[in-house]
Length: 288
Image (cartoon, rainbow, N blue to C red):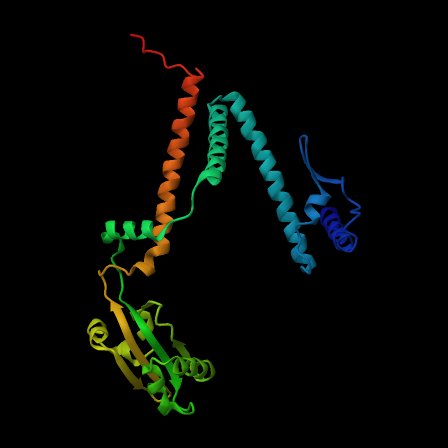
């Protein structure tokens, strides 16, 4: 009981501390100990989020203290066991530390030296050389797609706006869709996934969706609530080579990654070469 009252008082200290952050009254008061390791009120009080229910706060504090005790007691037992049963743990710790320091050092050198500028010529060359890597796993289309309520005004003029190539008509179409469309895509430079596109339309019920794609340039259908307009300007089907604009960013990332690997290897070679010049290492002949 005293323990729970103490924790409640600790919670009260936290609440009062929130309004006086500059002068916490419990900065050095211990609330738990394992040998020479101490847990202080200051550490525990800050784990409880603001506006937490007092009972929930109490449980959080109790859970934190129990975890803290378990962690330090377990570490103490492990240290005693290590003394009685010596292993190569110190060697592993040293190797891990060396590996971590080496990794950080190489990352620093890479960040300073790595060229992340990739030209269009490099992207195109990689694209043409590695065509098999860019086969599509799904159909894609370019065009216009609109879902409009049948009650929308001036809907009879919509087909003309969709098929028109005039800038003024495109602006009018964009304005109209922004006001009345349930969903739409008008950017004919953007590739869209065909299957995802038609799941929003009655075309989802068509058995052969690949044939539908290949035979459709413009179509409009309706259900009791909406009219669906689909204008296809270009398409690619599964196993076609993806258009360059669709994979150019991916290619740039691959080129930069390959540069990074090459740079890391070069850094290692340079270090070895300099160390050889400085006579910093020796390779001994094996003895028989």
